[in-house]
Image (cartoon, rainbow, N blue to C red; front, top):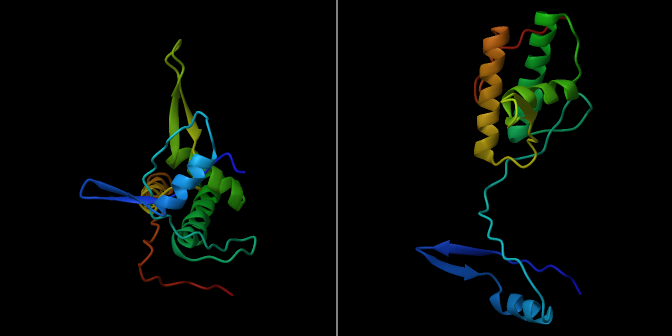
Length: 159
């Protein structure tokens, strides 16, 4: 028997409903005498994660835009500004460090360190905020305009 049971529910007009309540209550009762933890987590729409990048992975949606447009433009800007060629993974890590981080404060010295946060669990809105921060960072540091997802692009192909 599992030590963990889960169900989903909704709140509407202050009234809470649990999906498959009878089954959930039976499973809970089957745990017998025990201590338990109740956690309520608000669910958000996750962003689309279907992606292609230089390693040959296919992509669409928010991740596709990020990995096909933002990251390559960042790589180009980094190369032009610093003369250093970086790969896709390194560029992603740098963008997380500069645009999706948490400050960690040393209470003794007051020194502040940045710690990059994962983008994996960001909601659609949070991921768009991250993409906006990336676009702003690239503009401020490299003076390169990053097109928005729905912008029409003119591509200059050089043979």
